[in-house]
Image (cartoon, rainbow over all chains, first blue to last red; front, side, top):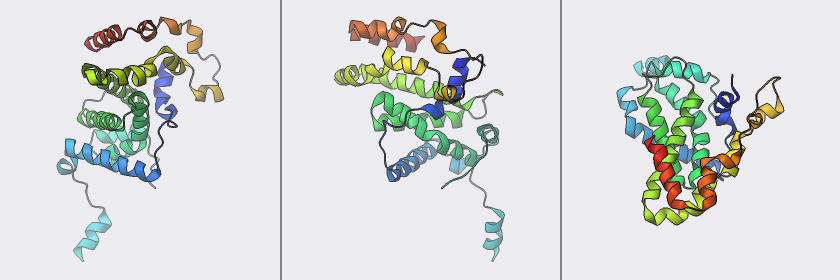
Length: 62
Length: 169
């Protein structure tokens, strides 16, 4: 495999994250905020709703 | 804390089946790297956020058209770089941003910064493979890059023209 291809394969793990100073709380908020925007644009929760796990289906019967 | 050790390739296979959990797992794994990369280039939280959003939207929209030998990291790499270039181009067209671009963004594209990317990755230094080809052996002179050519002249207009030519190409 050429060196360039290897570098592209690994680039996600070698991105310099030290420049970006962000607290854990901010990070979680940002993560949720961006994901909500993606959901709003693609509308996948409406088109492909998550199925409930089997134990939730059973407990719903009671 | 989320702990999911499913390989990326399995999650990508699940994307074909419209599995939203797989998509969200891929997002949780990689959003911060993309965000850090975009922020490092653009120095703007808002722009970085928009870029991450657009990259994942395009991944979701193209989930049914992904090739068999699809590489997620290569896809994210090309998408995020395209988005960064588009964002810089959009800012260049706004005259008010020119001084900011000249002082903050263009140095990030200079050959000194690009030369870092040309070095072998840190993994390779820790665990060198025998017979591996290193970029430093390819006789690539950093001074011959297009960015150095234009940036050293200090000619902002010609740099803008070069970027637009790249976009048109």
